[in-house]
Image (cartoon, rainbow, N blue to C red; front, side):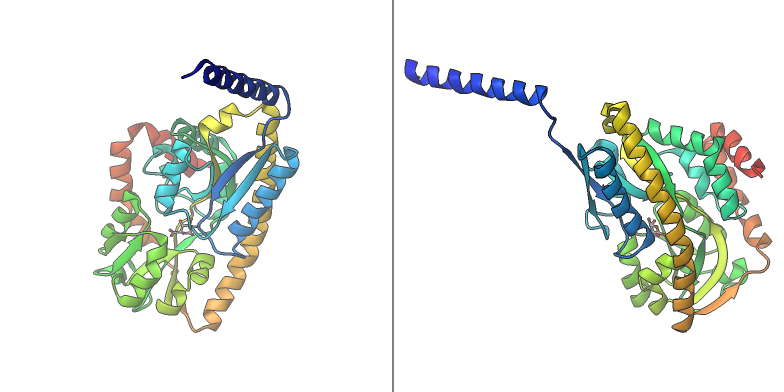
Length: 332
Ligand code: GTR
């Protein structure tokens, strides 16, 4: 390198240092977070995540903006959870189902029939049990900013109404990726088939699976009701959802921005819960009007009894979670 060249390089380097210094002293460049959501336009969670983005920008005075990627376009839910944990994505609206295999404390909500009803789930989540679940998730790199509703999940299939456990015998049933759900189907005598949400419609249509399980809004929004016309109100799972953020990112925020982001998530959750209550009704009406055969399961006891080995296995593998299960069961 000639002397002249060295001098020019040095000047350029000094200029870069000066610019960096100026930037550090002046306004910090706005951060853009990428957020994952599995649902389609108009779905309560999608609308609420858009609200979250709007509120984050407003409450942080534009220091943070959130770019939502709806419809699962950034990948499957288990993949997206991993991406948020490692920081490749910053935020996600996740169902606690696929978080359970990573965080055993969060898996309590995936024990079939652990919640008596939606109110019980809300009371437990808003109390000590919710704190314990959040702590378990934080240890695995996910901070739960707020909880979204996801109603109760029930069975649906292409063949017949399910009234008793024996009706599940021999059926191939899609479940989310979580051994508790595979265990649940196996204990009912069915064949569990863990599969990504996006693959279920085609699998029901082509007979790769005979059934699946979900709440009314997802059964409707995915079009599963068009190809699996028997919906049996088992309500075997009531799984909450979170707005979750990467833990390192969260810890790097100023207290002021943490407060702003948390408020934004909580306000978006209030909206989500209102929209959810409406959507449960309209989705149910829509699918029944479209010809879905619906039946209530009046006696849930045989289903609940069949779940004992699922609980036993989970507690044998995670003995330290027993008090949390009891805490939930004893929450009035
Ligand atoms: C929906 C839930 C999604 C996803 C989906 C599934 O109810 O909102 O996050 O978990 O169920 O069954 O995969």
